[in-house]
Length: 576
Image 1 (cartoon, rainbow, N blue to C red):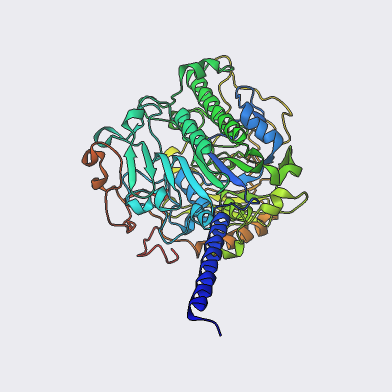
Image 2 (image 1 turned 135 degrees about the vertical axis):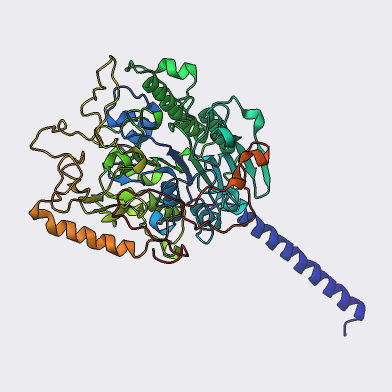
């Protein structure tokens, strides 16, 4: 029989063994929990601001020098049938939610500095989904998705840090924004939810260079062994700055610009050069960390360019028609490409498959290892198979360009046909033409380099003859409506709206418009909130209320026509 002491000694030994095994198991589990899934790629999304179709070298411009972007295009996949929204905030909301702006309330226009507007808090944004998959997310640049209450800030919506501006634009040097009575500094570093700093000391640093420095710093300091990186880079170039100095660029960058006599266009080319340098520096930083081969890079514009002096800026969408804020191709067909290992077999190719900016939401979630079936109530499509495989047809066959009940405007593409009603922006009615960039001599225009890449769009000269009515107008209905065959008429010369052969096409698109109008919510277009004035916050732009409720009031607005009926509803959750 064993003595009591022997039994106790054996029990003690067994307990120690169990403790050692438990500690060892915990250590192993901890080691596994800090080790990333090697199949998850890092994701860098560079979103240019108001970049024109013809503002990159690979679309054939003689003036634009973008060697770093062109290299990504040459080695990656160019997206040539790729669309965004007509203006800033709606495109960003579509990217972050996977939904059309008609379903987030952001279909009217961009968010103004002093409006209680943002992406509804019950909508889960892309970085929040990526966080669930183990990603560490950082945003550098322009937010422009609401900040009236702190809950709408980027660091409350999935990003670990944010660096840049909350609003639509700002001075590229001083980082101030506003007009006279409401002028304030809009330059922030947010680390986590409650550590927010106004970067007064960075006044005088050019915005694009500051964004590049911050992005490369984040890359150099990131622990790629433990977590994949999602770096969202919505830069402000080449958006105009302030009215007193709309096109701002470092002098050395402006001096490099050639091919135009026009002073503002030359400055604009300098802005593009700075943007391209940022792209090159981000790529070099990824390569220096040894993670470039496991990184997906997306380059996109948020909408078409501001051309011919629109908003005092000098981009170029040529040969596409019109400019930012219009529903024509020049306002919504945008530059886009994807680069990285998953699309290596598509290197140097041009995709003509239909894609919308909202499609990045499920696509990036899929690339990151998520199950797209988990994403509820979205209007977008997972494009991974289209982007990675040859001869794969896009699941997208249509998209809502925009419906704006305040302006009585509608736009939708179904298949190769595009229907528009009142496509002109109300505030800039006279920008519905075709605008070539100013050339080397006064009176001359930029000439294109022919056959630069397969992505180049070419059209015959604008048919300014009596036989061709270039207006978006129907003699039968008396409405400003038009129908274009975009595959065969990408420059939108020939309006088919009154041609009997296309009556069924029009009727089909109108049926699809009715379907989507039933899903539309009230546009968020409230009056200004005087409480937002920067003078109350030491002349800085900051969240100004604890009230997180979106402002559903409708400010006074003159619609496109007297026939435009605009009725408000009480909730953004109900069809409008």
